[in-house]
Amino acid sequence: MSVPIPGKSSWPELLGVLATPAATTIAHERPDVSVEVLPPGSPVIPYFNPTRVRVFIDNNGIVNQVPVIG
Image 1 (cartoon, rainbow, N blue to C red):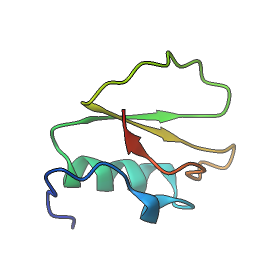
Image 2: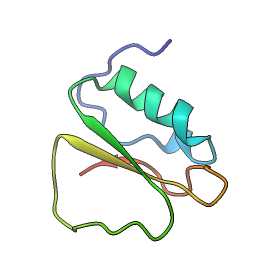
Image 3: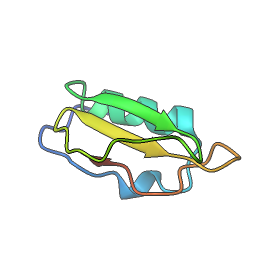
Image 4: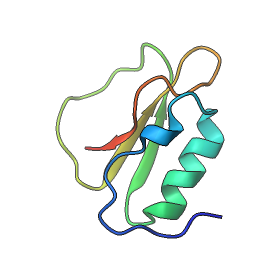
């Protein structure tokens, strides 16, 4: 189980991981942010939100971009 990591803002270690365990890891490490899992083609509004992490996945449910706060 992950331990909360205050100030962590990116998760490069989750690149290539399935969406559900990736989102769970982020939620455990940063319980103060919301996690959004977005499949290919999902519409997104490009504004910075310091309480959100977007997890972009491919058609197989694999994280295909490094999740970052914003």
